[in-house]
Image (cartoon, one colour):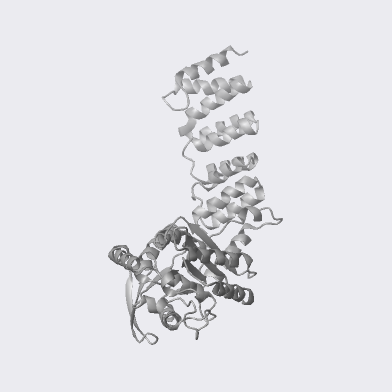
Length: 466
């Protein structure tokens, strides 16, 4: 049988961590809101802190991350989460720090020292903490703020053990669980395994981390939980155990970032996209609609396709070299205004070129000239190059540039040079070549496309032809 003193956190280190965290707390969480509430379960006033997303709005809904061990975990959870939110790795969340007045009493693991309490039940202090959390704090947060219904609970050491035991409490309205180095009896992990196999859960995420330099019993707990994760039949339960080269304290910063990302691993999850593209009758809009439904069903939030994600999906589509898929992507891009209004046709043209759809690319380049921004020779040179190099239609290319001189007179020097050069390279009409190169000689000015010397060379070549 385990004894408490062997597995509880060294109080000196806990105290030092708490002091260090408290010193940085005001700097890292100046925007945090302090709330107090009278707890019927502890019969005392309790404190929590709340950090709202930078762009918090009552018109939106937000998942909530509850961090036990507030002095230790609230600052680092707030900091890590803020960066992940800023970079759109996780959705905007509300962070709540829960502060303990008597940590040992409130979080004491049940190792069977009290024979009157089964090891699958909480002791008196953790029972009070459970009720305080579920019946006082969570309802208070739901009342004050726009919450989505997706709640995550984080704990370290004793509170990690508490987090693990909360999973099997049917009244616990949490979907995400992060346990950093919990310490459990085998009977407790076996109970969790039975509970998972016999229960119908909502989508539930559980992240457990262990340290190679930590207490061996805690590492063994992680390994036992890993076995539970790999053998459970519950499809709604997603869990992972990760081992770090860390001790009891530094395991927190080393694993928390991974933990938060795992909890929100189905947020903007496009890992299946490459495989789904192989399906017959694949619909990109239907795929994105499904992602939207998942975000709502799991996290309770509205799904918004971001520009960065669109271009990631587009890059995968381009690899397939499929016209239908590409044009589906174009439609999504236009609907979300990811293409510049003035450059939409040139963007499409370049993507068509990338998958070797040259006729479609040519049409798009011409549409760019007639409907979009065209005040640069670039927009005329690209379709000209397509006609000469890819489509092998130099006569048409020359005719195109002759018309372009009229449409964009500022490009006349470049266009005439290209006409003359093409005439020489493809042995076409000498008259058209002479007219074009004569214009270049009479109107020559320094430019980045050709020199006076090359102009004279082309003129000489044309004059020597019969």
